[in-house]
Length: 225
Image 1 (spheres, rainbow, N blue to C red):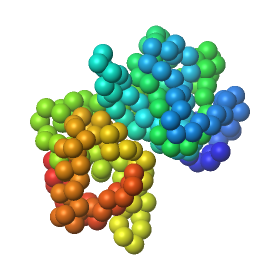
Image 2 (tube, rainbow, N blue to C red; image 1 turned 120 degrees about the vertical axis):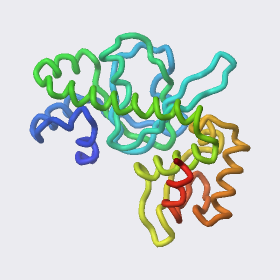
Image 3 (cartoon, rainbow, N blue to C red; image 1 turned 30 degrees about the vertical axis):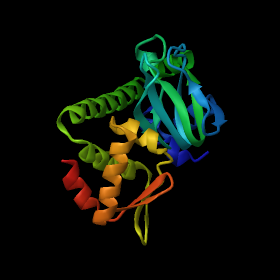
Image 4 (cartoon, helix red, strand yellow; image 1 turned 90 degrees about the vertical axis):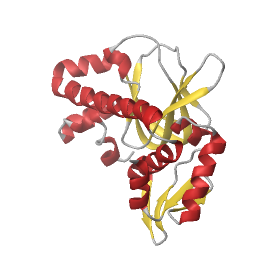
């Protein structure tokens, strides 16, 4: 387990090293493969999770079976914590996007820990507020931004968290299928593919299998506005 990755999570951000190590020792490690499900929408919310390696997507299903992809999370990010502050069934399904390792903590143990370290609760609420802000931005984009703009914004967001520099540009191994990428921006796969092909033709990106390399991020930022 990469301790530096874990310390990025809001659960640990306010802790000193000794207290963080003590908390990690009480958490349960787990490893899942792509396609596995951490929990389903409607399941009891009894634990939170911190990703140490890999990626997890949070999605909701419509009555007709269609799926809406709300977010993609990676190392150092946390999910499942909403049940601590609002007990009830899970609002999303957590799918494993790539082989993933994470550590989990039950709500009972977490509540006991927060009683001793109330500053951690503030960090967790700040993390929830950040996610809510991004959700609100996404809803606004669906109304006011066209599909190419949303695709550009999604690529930039993914690059901020999963990108790595190379001689060719900023390589973003997002591990998403074309359908999943379309769900992320709330559009059809055909429309998203058309936007990606246009970006590639303009020389802004090069496309790969479940990855994209950003060549001209500044042009993408202008397109995302």
